[in-house]
Length: 422
Image 1 (cartoon, rainbow, N blue to C red):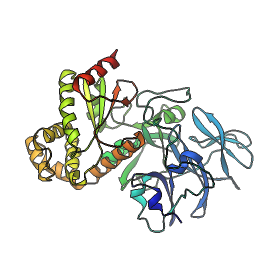
Image 2 (image 1 turned 120 degrees about the vertical axis):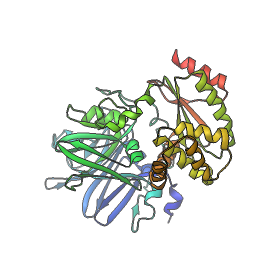
Image 3 (image 1 turned 180 degrees about the vertical axis):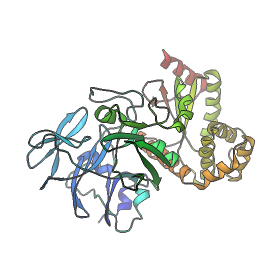
Image 4 (image 1 turned 135 degrees about the horizontal axis):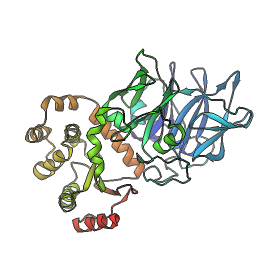
């Protein structure tokens, strides 16, 4: 028997379902290829579904009235979303809505079962956990995403009727509905913040994260089931005038905490840098990028953590916590300008003092799970984009497509920026 540790890396993602004492983890490796898995968990018949085109990972109760349905992939799409069919009547169901559109069950809906998107590292030590095997009876390259870089760029394979451009279309949202009011929360921003409260249907919902898992409860402690999906698909299927959205800098944001990030969105061009503080080439590239920022001040650098040398983890955590006080890039710049290649954790305190950071807030951040969660999310994102080392540079013009930046010299980078502006 193949051990799970040989199938999955720490950052492999999957859908975690917990019903009673029965916990199961369904890897994206398999879901990318097969999209629907019928199972019974904790005595409940479930369908674990995933649409790669819209990133929607949703678990449903397979019971409709007295019938227990079994679902398959129809091979058809509706609004760029997977159309499922039930093998009992061959009715066609919208996966992201969980509602039948054609057939005997038209307008009938499936109940959503709460699920989490977690990494293998988050779940591998759960006692009694059952995982999805690669022994499916089919010959597939389960370690490879057949959709390439689709999840990172702005292009859609198939058109949708209503494309909301307030967010990058592939932004992953945690979504659900309460008292028939839809809501969507930017998942990465929630993980970075740790917890938020939103008013939905005149009730307070509390969103909290813990070791990669997210829970949503009402003000009376009632759990609210959620699912994950890309922004473009949620907005196309679920956006109504009453819908509640929480996303950094998004015009319809309902929380005051988001306004701090609006200035970051004014840059004409963004350079995304995956870096590691122990990387000598990152030190050299930092000099080039600093010169680029001086020459093109409307350019923004978006820093992404890609851990190559574990001894530098405290420095990475320090940068993340400095960013919470609006000094993330200043911390990054000071390290490479003055302290590289030191891995001494005391460097964090030294830089924090120079930048006049609030020491109490810094300590609280460093003692929290937020730095680790941010690093984990950056590493997952890097894996999806095919990042293999540092520094890796990507570039994205305003409202444009994220693409590789294959030059490292300041003059060449400036030339690319200017070309993209034309």
